[in-house]
Amino acid sequence: MPNLLHNPTTARRIALRPQGLVLAVLGSLAAVLPAVAQLNLSAPQSAPAPQPATSYQGSVATDKATAETLSLTLEDAVQRGLKTNLGLLLSNTQIASSRGQRLQDLQALLPSIDANIKESLQQNDLAAQGLKIPGFPTIIGPFGFTDIRANLTWTVFSLNSLKTYMAARHNFRSAQLSAEDARQMVILTVGNAYLKVLADQALIESTQAQVETSKVSLDQASRNHAAGTAPRLDELRAQVDTQRLEQQLIVAKNAKEKDKLALAHIIGLPLGQNFETADKAPYAAFDQPDVQEAIRQALANRKDRQASAEATKGEEDMRKAATYDRLPTVKAEADYGDIGVNVRHSHGTGNATGTITIPIFKEAQYRGEAQVAQSALDEQRDKQSDLDAQIEADVRDALLDIASSQQQVEVAHSNVELSTEVLSEAQDRYKAGVSDNLAVSDAQQTVAQADSQYVNSLYQHNVAKLNLARAMGVAQNYKQYLGGK
Image (tube, rainbow, N blue to C red; front, top):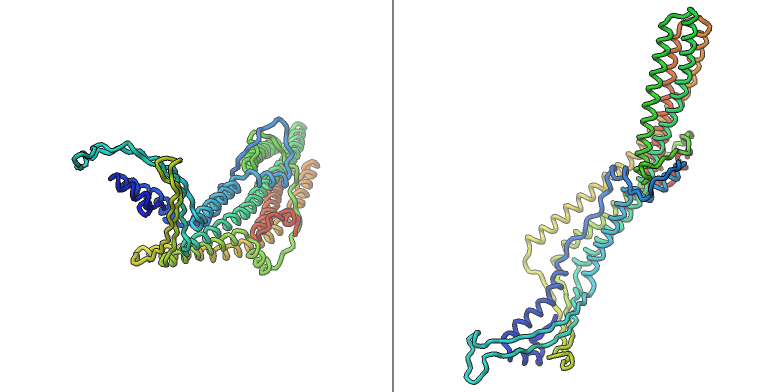
């Protein structure tokens, strides 16, 4: 801090001009205020909160739609999502924010150096200030000086600042881990959306086949009615069945287009870009792992759990920082520069000051800071404990869903085969004139229901395996899980 009053040359100049003292004091304050502002440290930002699930349904699209039809595999969709998904991009911005906060808190531990150039010009009216000396001029000046100076401020010792910086480091690491966990969520979200489109396509193909089969039955009923071997009711019933299936086909195609739009929005494809899925819905029986071993691996692998642990360490450091606020701090200030009537006629001057600040009585403030920090720490520890329980629940739920959906796939597949056989026999009986087509109509509805159940159970089975991969913190290995690891 510039201390003009302690410099003999400056002191003599001040004695000759009454306003010089004011200027000197103002100059000193100007150098001190930045350092004071740095000492008024704010608490670091809290650890970044996980992105809401809705953010993973969006993206930032940078490409433009083309006239060609893209062939999109699940791997292609995942890679696009990892580049453009909104949830991951927002997590990366949290890393940048935490990095900036860490640098701000680091500066409190480092020296701060500023430079300033001051040019002063004055003219004083002594009479206006009540000074009337016979034979002495009432107007003095103009006169001035030039001051070129560098100022250093450094908080040499402050445990509060040190722990505040350590908390910022933990929060930065927590942000990095949260971004890694966001990648897992992107893979899960993209995989779910892609599998939904595959399920829509399978349902469309199944319904289309049922429409073609129904048209065959309608033609048979029309011929029988024209030949007088079947009542008009048979033809009407077959026509109703055909139109019902055509309506279902329209609904299925509309659902697929909407789900394709949702997938495109998730992975950053322009919504006007036409694409088709290149993969087929996979199915492989899943080898059930040991539940306790799966839970142990999940607790070790989950990035959100590791991020929560870092956030807890950050809150612990902030609680210590609140306690260390009661301890003394050591601050050093120094300045050096040239001062004179101009640059050619100047002389070097300097000043160094060390200050030890000992808190005496700020009991209400210190207790309040400690209570706030303790509350934040307790809240974070509760969240950590709840997250551990949630991870275990995620693993158990996924394993239950896999076992259940796998049985549903097997039963649904058997139902498809049985209902298809029933339909074939009903068609043969009607063609032979043994019965009316009521049995055919009932069998067609049964086939449609069995196909729908099979498609849905297969979708649920694959989604359950993706959920398990995410629950165990290894969503990047989704291919192995879909393959029946």
